[in-house]
Image (tube, rainbow, N blue to C red; front, side, top):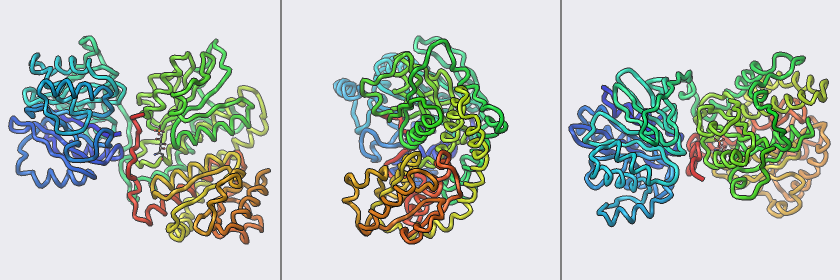
Amino acid sequence: MCGIVGYVGEKKCTDILLSGLKSLEYRGYDSAGIAIIDEDTVKIFKSVGKIQNLFDKVENEKSNIKNPVVGIGHIRWATHGKPTLFNAHPHTCNCGNLAIVHNGIIENYKELREELTLKGAIFKSETDTETVAHLIAYEYESSKDLLIAVQNATKKLKGAYSLCIMHRDNPDEIIATKCFAPLLIGVGENENMVGSDVPAIIGITNKIIYLDDMDIAVVKKDGVVVRNYNGDVVNKKVVELSIKEDSLNKMGYKHFMIKEIFEQPDIIRNALNGRLKDVHSNIVFPEIDSLQSDKKIDNIKIVACGTSLHAGIIAKYIIEDLTGVTIEVESSSEYIYRNNTTNSSSLVIGISQSGETADTITAMRLAKDKGAKILIITNRPDSSICKFADSVIPVNAGIEVSVAATKSYTAQLIVLYLFAIYLCEVQKKHTAVLREIKQELLTIPSKIEHILNNKSEIEGMAKSLSHYKDFIYIARGTNLATAQEGALKLKEISYINATAYPAGELKHGPIAMLDENMPVLAILIPNHITFDKMISNCEEAKARNAKLIALTSSNDERLEKLFDYIIRVPEVSEILSPLITYVPLQLLAYYIANYLGKDVDQPRNLAKSVTVE
Ligand code: AGP
């Protein structure tokens, strides 16, 4: 949540800061601001709402901007205080000579605020961040050394933060520090940047220094010096990234979400290329081989949030089905606040697209403290969560910009399927069945392409369904989580209420809600033991006048009569069906939201990475 950018160099930095913020827009979009040092003064420009408002503001005031070569910027997702101009970052101290931007939450800000008020600080916002500005300013008064002031101030902070600080007296530097929130430095030629995520700096450089917790970096145009908590200089590794600019570009699509949906077949192809040589060879998983140890693992837990949790639920179904090994799956936010049974014989698998989700990070930390082995499945192997990992499996979806996760879900699913097959191969079980599954896996990308090529049918359907205010999605078996994921997609981007139920649960309560205003979308997998039961559940819904939508590959003659709409998908076995059934649900959600004119890539109230608990 929120995004930070900073620049020190020789170029006029306003455009660089604005474009860095633009590429972080998916992290938060309630308000935005920049602070620059220009003509020996700290100048601050802020606006509420989308980043475009800040572009307009800076443009309108360009006559007041001469030649700033140092600046910091922030894009906000409100935690403390409403998205107002006062609460927008950068924040400053009484004299206005210091400016800071902050991601995270300062837990002891109330106590600090009281103390600082007594010492004369005048607060203009409701934010926890402003406390840090006054605290550093107060420390600076006595030390007259910005680095020492930051060192002293951060020792008093409790909570999570990444901070960028600049001061009029030090017009050639930015100070950057972090604790439990990501921050990195982009190393350029006669210019350096700070960013909370790679997209912020990728327009300038692909050379990165990842800061560790409690590191404090002094960033100047011609050098970066990083010190640890004790003030000792630490040598940091400069990592060269190969981020494709395409990830940050809509490439002609109207939204990132639809672009990312269309990337899915290739993501599966790439994952298979790396790990599935041919159907006769075993799956290649060096990341899991490296997890083997003398310590016996006798229980496996998957912990994740949102879409990643849905991928985890599907993994439970397929792993239990193929291997007979029990898998527990739990939402990270539940796992961390109860006496769970994790112990030193546990393997805890954390799934997170961003690797920055606070609940999942805390879950991994707690599991690690209990002695569990930690396996992280993430799209960002450079993220904070990985530091708790015994092993990391990157899912390689490329940067996902749309807040609604689509391609990262695909990438997680395919890795989890390969993981399930791998576990089965280790057990030397079902060899012939596994061969068939592997054979069929290879056909999945073209099946998804088939669905994508027929997108206009779903688009048409979306138009005629877009006036409903509520939907129920039902499924049984492996696709229950597909229904949950489809409902989540619809909710988050169209703000239409959608709830998923195991179809058998309908008659235990939800059926009371059914009438002509409540469409029911059912996922029906032919030749599966649940197919006839699903038909009966749909008939029960029809008897209550619900509009019925089938998502199926079946040609069963009962369907045409029973359903008002049928979304057809290519034939696929039940076990692999979750690898294709979610695609029409992504498209349906997308086209409904687009038809309703919603802000598809940046839905209200949401942020791409939920870095607060
Ligand atoms: C998905 O569309 C969501 N925006 C959200 O549920 C997301 O999956 C969740 O916040 C978890 O994020 P992570 O995978 O980055 O941990």
